Length: 51
Image (cartoon, rainbow, N blue to C red):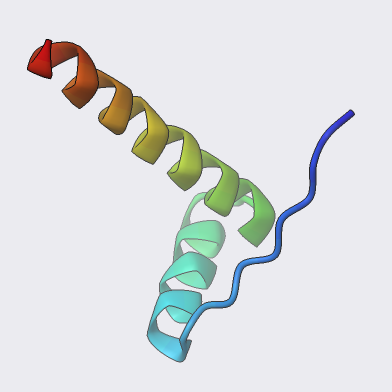
């Protein structure tokens, strides 16, 4: 079962998410999901390199 999170963004970050969504024909929710995935993958890659 999926878990829901709430994200509070300032105006600049919100605008950036909206622009990415519009530019890539995605919803803001999908943009945030992809950004989280990329961020987590980056952290995992750093952890692997640090070992």
